[in-house]
Image 1 (cartoon, helix red, strand yellow):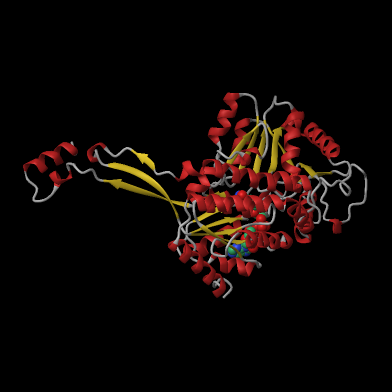
Image 2 (cartoon, helix red, strand yellow):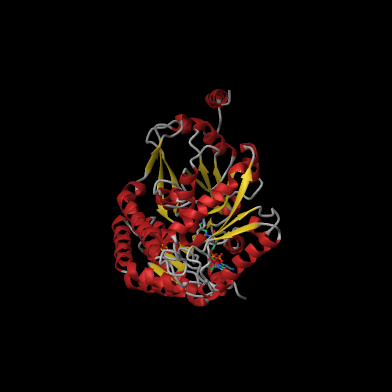
Length: 470
Ligand code: NAD
């Protein structure tokens, strides 16, 4: 059976668990592991840029530096800075009846964490969950994506070079290996990928009662308020949408603009796209689509919308031939996209942006709430009362106001979806807590009143029970 764990994966897990039980990582060990990871990533930053670019066809080197290497190193530094504080027992006041007893919460390593990562940010989404897991004192097994094989090889090499197999282990393979991996009895499984595969992963984990963190996707809306400066909204939306050619879990999936501004919005956005990417074939800053299958999927989605009556605007500032084999998918804007076509139902996950018009804020909110709960929401509005209204009336994994993407880069904010866009959170203290057992401990005082409530119950117990249930 495809989802039966392979013996070697089992034994790797058992070895890690035995090592954990014998010698759980203390503070010094965790710092050593995080520093080793930091040094290994730093020394391979150009290797990551090259491997990811080779896997994609072309991936902007700057995007790899900013959205992978910088994010990973910043995250490790944040963990190193606060780890001692997060590890400390957290005193909690005991309930009045139980004083002078004392309570505390002791974060404790769970054991062995499984991590399954996707291809779109293949270094960041493998190494940030590993950072959280190691900081919380766990051992880790990683299964990176088969769609970015050179990066996965590099991750395996990095892991081998700086960790013992009993500390961190990397398992390579395709969907069958991934399915078997997700059936291993981990102490927690962190999965990043699509909602469809997330469902399957959760079912496999349920057989072992393995708790999961599911970092999934969805259709993240952007909403531009009536009097918000258009050039500013366009500047931030182009940044968030066309980074990694839209292959970003929290990329704006579609944008809602006031009905009367739709045409000028598309014109302004096209001009900005053409300014940033003067030649799509030549620009090293414009990333290609990861595979022919993904390219074809986007092509089919846009053609279906066009046949359904959508007006399609494809950027090609240099007027150059853009062959399908290049997997350069031109930034594409759409007006009048039919509501029932694939582009409006599925997560787009590419450089294609339907621009929808709204006539009232209530209507725009109703549109957002008519879809699955998204991973992110972007609001462009300087009116605090209106922004408050949108925040209160919608629910999403995270929000950036007057910008895109940047809530993910804040170490102090939890990252994760809600409902179909995900379960659980990580980043900073939230990842540390998610991958720890927060063990509640009650310590009885030498002198206490609990003996007054022992059988045989007499008048004092009657009095106390009466008083406490008054
Ligand atoms: P995917 O779900 O196809 O694959 C992700 C991982 O799951 C891969 O490592 C793959 O090998 C593994 N996998 C495949 N079949 C499996 C199975 N049956 N059991 C267990 N594992 C299996 O996702 P993808 O195409 O790599 O990534 C794109 C999706 O991921 C998008 O939906 C995107 O929104 C989402 N995503 C979410 C986040 C986030 O942080 N929330 C980040 C990046 C991507």
